[in-house]
Image 1 (tube, rainbow, N blue to C red):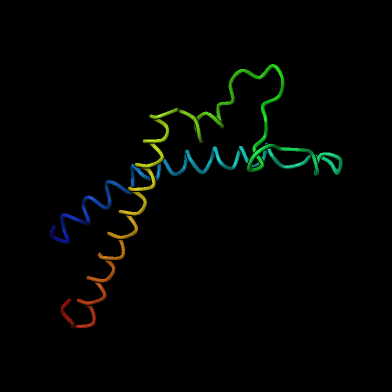
Image 2 (cartoon, rainbow, N blue to C red):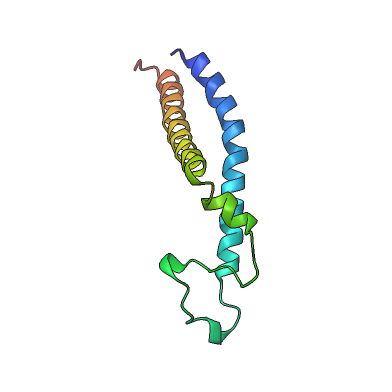
Length: 109
């Protein structure tokens, strides 16, 4: 793939990825804030596996939790795609940077 074409795909994928990373990070922050102890007495309560906060009685749907780590098979595929795209963005960004650096120093890679 030529660098110009790679840059075009990198730019487009970055715009899409930013939206989904914002959603994933935002719901993760909300879940973390929900798990913070509110008083000294709550600091040592049992939070279940991995510090997960159990939904309060009567709660039927937790939107942040469902968006962040729910969705069954589709949710798992979404998170795999998000992770894969993040890795691709990082590696293509390094490749683009390396090409620019090589050109500016007069060396050929």
